[in-house]
Image 1 (cartoon, rainbow over the protein chains, first blue to last red):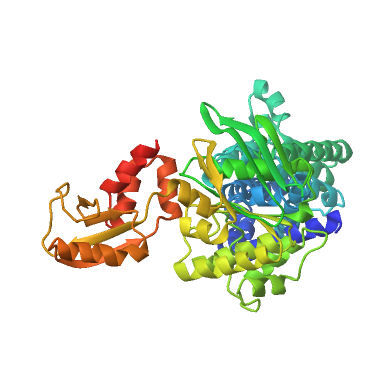
Image 2 (image 1 turned 135 degrees about the horizontal axis):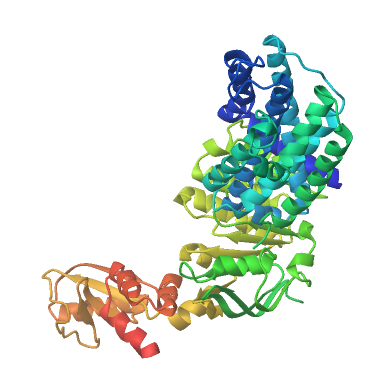
Length: 247
Length: 321
């Protein structure tokens, strides 16, 4: 049995389980659509009319994508790790040939597939709302790489949270500030000068900068994509190391 | 023949609590070994040490001749305590999932049939009955056709019929040569399945032996309980020629009476003009031995009260200490 076959077995069980949870499926895909309805449909996004949500559209497309690559893996992997630990599934898996790295790879693959599907839904919704955006091949690297980043961080959250509820609360508590402080919906110029360097600490900011560079204003997509890829490798390695495979 | 499972002077602490305090035991190939003990005695911790899912603070553990972490996973099966697999998979999908993790696995349908589940059923695991769930979990533990199978409280919360069905599965496995390491709170289960039983209490092994050896050594005498037609006060004296019974709340108790002596007891009761409504006789069980060794005096009394005796049991318990 190859490593790939073990990953496939874990991934197959995972996506089957997910697709049979109708509530999870609905909200996974409904959440980004809801944001688009709010920001592209209800909020006036035209520049020059004032207010917080009046930024250039270049801040919205990265924001929509950021919501998908941030919330889905962070909360799903976090709660999954907690669920596996609480149900003694890791104890069982640790006596099989599956390794913790293979386990996280399988769950990351499922999340990347879900995120790809959610991005497709998002693009359809953007089209229906008449938003203008540019499809860039950089997205094919940025979206999966950022998904891996937050799968790894989700694994860390799930490993240290004391249960599923704690994992979900912690992932939401981390995701929301990250979302709004990572040059997505809000331009950095709206933050105080002293705070702007702090934004660079967010892993999501490199994703949003990369997406904006690739799809809107031009700029350095290469460097930001490279940072996201490096962060993906680091987050995956750390996530793998801390999964509570054994006591 | 080398033992397949060896623990030598294993210690494991969680903070200030000693979960395992110098546990030593060995299990031979093909043996069914039951580990019994009170809640918190360290049974699950020992299973985790033996399977490599936790590391002892000190002492050595060998599984199939190697450290557990280095043992070929193909040869080991585990049903963890309180195991909760994905609940939106059918039993067939669940077993096929675990089969997919091994180099060489049995056909999922065949394993399900072995444990008495219909592979064709499309009911999700979460919608199965408690007994069916445990059978599916056992099937998941068997899918790699292990040489050594760890079952941590496999029949907890399973109804009597389901429990017996699982026992038959385990008996077939044992007959086929699978080494089984079982933890349980069900003394009838241990007595029926195990070649040897170890009692773990306070993180240490209090006794090890065949069920018969443990019962003989620690189970106390047989008991004949006579329910008199006219109730007697517990502690009252009764003169039955040739016997030395005691009076308890359950009746007149004759300790150490064999079945062939029952007629003599009845004759003696007639001689003593003691009318009675009923009598019952029972042998000591593994549960008696367990309660004796676990130091649960209240439990010992309750167990013996069920059979109609308590005073004589207390005297024996004290005498053995």
